[in-house]
Amino acid sequence: MVNGVSSRELRVSDAEREHVVGLLQKAIGMGLLTLEEFTDRTDVALSSRTRAELNVVLADLPGMTHPEMRVRGGQWGRQPAGPPLPGEPMVLSSGCGSSITRNGYWQVPRSMLIRSKWGSGVNLDFTEAVFEHERLDMRIEVTGGAVTLRLPDGASVSLNDLNTRMGASVNDRVGFQGRQGTPQIVVSGDLSMAALTIKGPRR
Image (cartoon, rainbow, N blue to C red; front, side, top):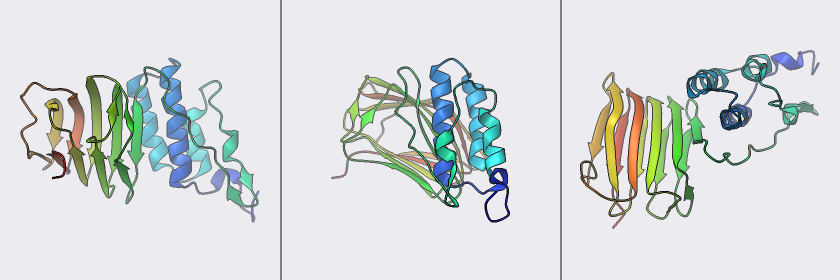
């Protein structure tokens, strides 16, 4: 009980939501969840307002507790989620009004899952990134906002498995689609009421 409010009813922040998504990500690597179950539970986690709502997505997962999220002096404590386990996707997620950005030097795994609902933008700059593999499988689940992918010279893109709905648009400014090249970015998923723009390196 904190200031007369049950700990279960305390509000959670974006940081806590992202931490739980990280735990769900680990559950995939352990074989505890399918990708569909992960997607459903991530939706719940990102829309959770209270600790009780957030706890639901971890309740039946052995070992997926989060003691880091205990109350300390009326404030939430948190430990950052660890890196993805081998074979599981890197998950980047944002909620309403927040953004996702990657630029400069960073390591690109074999697969990524990008989730954003009414965020302020997704900006992924791969021009200085280090790819672990020649092919990147990227699943996009974005509603509202804009997604910008900035790719290095010589890269190629496949959008055959990307569904666009409700006014969503795709703009390949350089012509990465339909050509041979590495790294190859294979984009799938759902884009709704959002715009995907593919750019080349800054000149």
